[in-house]
Image (cartoon, rainbow, N blue to C red; front, top):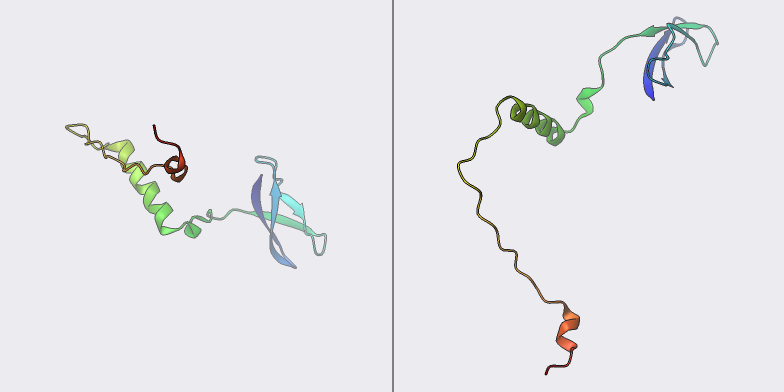
Amino acid sequence: MATYEYLCSRCGAFDVKLEIGTAPRAYGCPVCAGAARRVYSSPGLSLTSHAVAALHVREEQAREAPAVVSQVPPRRRVPRHPHPALSRLPRL
């Protein structure tokens, strides 16, 4: 589903959710039932958080110039903590 924007000359702008590629040039206004014309506007990309926007920029940069490494990074050892129930098991 895509959101399409229409503008009624009497009531103003409103949005309609339709399947992609099925939006007509004119659509009936939900308030006055008059013909409203389709309006083309920029996508709402400004609502993207800074973290997501930075991730997109980094991903696009990696497409053009991927980071080159000279060696495999060292393996990090994760400390393992035994399960608490294991201490209650009988010892031989």
